[in-house]
Image 1 (tube, helix red, strand yellow):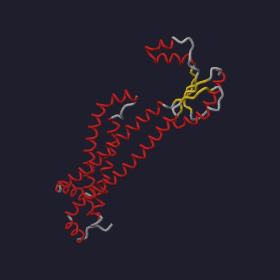
Image 2 (tube, one colour):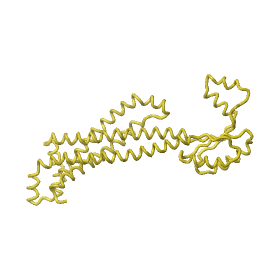
Image 3 (cartoon, helix red, strand yellow):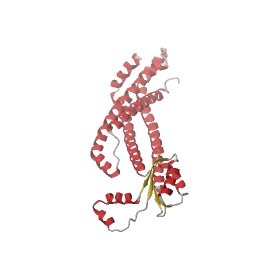
Image 4 (cartoon, helix red, strand yellow):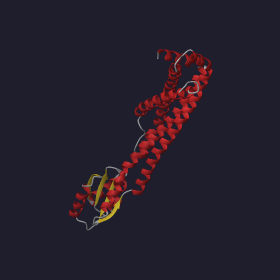
Length: 293
């Protein structure tokens, strides 16, 4: 192990051009993966924030529906496992809420002699996917005039979330395969430069792992250096992005970008794991031509 580590550092600095090419290859791949990771995490965060805004069902009751009948509905709805919160909204309170929402133009509502708003039930579901189940149950009740919930919007958000998840997985897998191929080809050039030395080591009885060790450690070293560079670049650029767009996005979407600390901590671990794995796999693959595996 000590021999492999010493030889790896010697080869890394001795073959400066090749080492630099390998570092740039892995760094480029990790940067692409990093930007894609930033995009996926933040888009998922924004979508989740939007989903939470549509997890409420409002049931408008008929004018003839008495509170006792509404209370019976609430007891049945409240027993459903999909329901997280449930409350009765009198039309007087609904009107006051509208006045607050209208702000300076609230006087327009006061011009009406009668309250045009009906009594209603406000239902909050635990998961947005369960809204359709709750609505189907409510449609069986008498005394319901209209049910207001965003079924089409909910379906689109669910499809979007699934598309993002599967798309992210597909792109990451493709990039990982490309990165291993690129690194293995780059490291193979280093192996070819030492082909005669490897042949002599095999003739004098060196084991495959004794020969492979320095190249494996060198690949890991290249991966660590690439991961450190990539993490630094991504952290700097993400800090700038938050400074420029973070506040505006929070105002427009009611949800901000994922925190820098969360992204940096997770990306550092991911980059380190990917860099080491890509470097090690690339080294092993590039050595298969010269060793019995």
